Structures are given as structure tokens and as C-alpha cells.
Image (cartoon, rainbow, N blue to C red):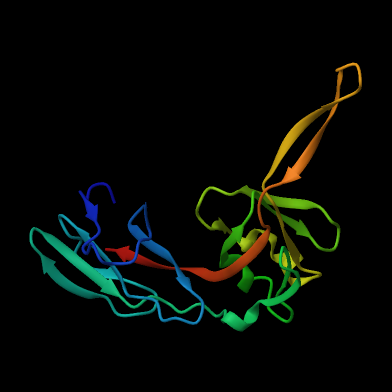
Length: 207
């Protein structure tokens, strides 16, 4: 591939972002798409084009793009639907996520963007109570690959728990010796939304 492809670029600034990987004589393009939506076609360009580019499925369209050659093919749809995830709202700050009846293999590509209000969001295996992930609030939703926890999702589920912001105040005894600290809650704790997506990809073989 190094002797064929000199440069690979994104051809449209408005195109959905994604990842592009070169391996041997193949180019693999992938991106996350929201469940229940049709993914935009995969497009990439190359300088010093190979003789032929093909995929195992969709037809590849070839066009000139200035000094580059542009290749476009339909992106595959994910088998997952938005209804794959069952959400039980235990409380505003605790949600249980499960995927009953969904193949564990299909869950491997599942991602979630978790929007929450609070200081910290934790994720637990609902069957064992084991902490499996956490995120300190930084102004953006927590993006996590739920596919890493597909066995838990297909079983008892995973539980999200948000903790509020708080301040610690030192407490002392009558002699002024610091003994402990007291925490005061200063904000709300709640889960706002969980947006699901799945990673889809397509390999282009260069001949």
C-alpha cells in the first residue's frame, strides 16, 4: 500500500467524521452512526490511484477530485435499533440499562453519549455491583463504548449513578483539633439523556 497510496484525505468538510486505517493493500473507513438512521456513504481520496478498488459488498463509485481520485460506497446499516436498549429510571440520578433479547455479538459496536448534571457519573455491573466505569463532568456528555460491557447489558444490565457536586468543610472539636470533614451538596444530580450509536465500517481493497 505504501507504494500505491501517497496521500489519503477527507474530501468534504461537511462529511461526517470518522476513522480511516491503512493495512497492506486495503483501506478501512469507519464511523459512529445514531441508531435508527441511515449512515452517509463512505468517501475517501488518494493520490496515485491503484488500478482497481472494490469492496466485498457495495459498488464503488470512482470520480476525479482535482489531482486525487475519489472513491465512494454505501455504508452498511447497523443491525441494532433504538429499541434494543431498555431503560429503567430508578430515580432521576439512577438509570438501569439492559438489552434483553439482543445478541451479544451485535452489542460489540454499541456506543452511548450520556448527558448528565452533577459532579460524577459512575457505571456499575448490575449483577455484581462492580464499578466498571466513571466520568467526571467536564461540560460534555460522557462518551463510552457500551460494547465493552455487552455481557452485563445482555444480563442484569448496567446501572448509571450520578453524584452531585459538593464542598467539604473541616470540623474540629472544642480544642480546635481537626477531626473530620463535612460535605455539603451544592448542586443537582440527574441523568438528562442517553444517546445511542453504533460503529459501522467498510473495507476497500486496492488491486
